[in-house]
Image (cartoon, rainbow, N blue to C red; front, side):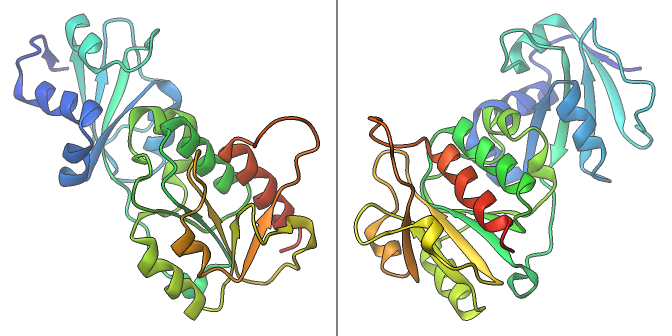
Length: 254
C-alpha cells in the first residue's frame, strides 16, 4: 500500500483545499468525507470514491468492497491537516460529487431552502428530508455548501441518497409551479397554521434563513404561507426543527 508522508505533496494540498475552500469543491465537483460511517456510506455509491486515506491507527472494515479504489496510508501530520473533527478516526475518502437525475415531473415532495447559512442546520435539513421521503432538496443562494465537512457530518450520509441541487430559487419556484406543485412557504404574516393546509399530491416546502426567514420576493410566489404555532415563550423554532415538523406532517398525508 502506498504511503504519503509529506503535507507538501500535491494530492495532500488538493485534499486540504477540498476540506477548507468551497470554491475548490465547486470547481472540481469533489469533496472529502471523514470518519468510518461516512466512508461506508460513500462506498455504497458506485464510482464516487477516488481514494481512501488511512491514518496509522485506521483500518478498513472487513466487509467493505474497495475494488477499483486506491487506498493510501497517510502520516499523522497529514491526518491533522485533513481532520475537521476534534477526535478524528483517521480515515477519509476523496470523492466525486454524486450525480442524480433531475426530473421534477417525477417528484411529489420537494424541499426548497432559502439562504440557510449554518452548515449544521443544512446537514440536518438534508438528513430530515431523506428520512421524510422527500425526492429532492434545492439549496438557494446564500445557503451553506452541501459538501462542507460540517454539513456532511450533520447529514450522516443522506447527501448521497437524494438530489441536492444548488440553484437560483427565482428560476426554480416558477418551474415547480409549472409542474403542478403546491408551494407552501413559512412566514409570520398572512400565514395559516400548517395543520390547516390541505395536502396535495405534489408539494414543495420553502424554508427560510435562520434570522430573516424566507425572502419577501419568494413568499410572493408561494400558494400558501404557513406557520408553526409557538405555545411557550421562545421567539422561534430552529429552522431544522421547523423543517422536520412540516415535512413529517405532510409525509403522513402523502
